[in-house]
Image (cartoon, rainbow, N blue to C red; front, top):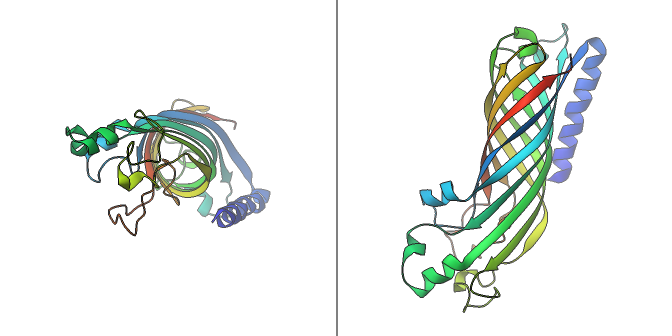
Length: 248
């Protein structure tokens, strides 16, 4: 999967490099930050409390490239976005299964993971009313999709003691809850808009979903053959607000 993402990135950059020979490129740099809502094996499926309380911070630096090219209408509606971003979030169980006075609930309440991750990748942004480079519009909505390569580090622990025993964590998590780190690939989909302040400055609002091709991002992965409720890999939702500077 990493090779496929890198190959696609090379193809897109090569296309823009060749097309740039026929026209001038528009280049921009931006920064964004905001909350990230991480959805994982912490908490039961459908528990809204897990969705709104397992929240961390995210931020990143972004480079945009589009073309001033009269030979192709394709470039009128697209920007390529290269990015480097990070996130950090503290995860724990919430919901009805944690609030009980049972031994099972007590063990769930003690479980935590501190997750930090960095991403590098790209997104291809599509502007249905043309990019602001061509339209000159103050308000420019877009949708986008892309791929990321993610380095993650999950520090799993329990407030009750060393993990890995049924005395500290429920049996379900004895072999499925541990420190985890490594590389993962992911796909992203975003929706947002730009609000141009003047020729060189704009505000950007960006909402993104990111699906990871691993279930160990949170340091938790109960055996799916036994615990069939563990159906999906980890994913996150991010709402970023940022600033873009136009070089030309």
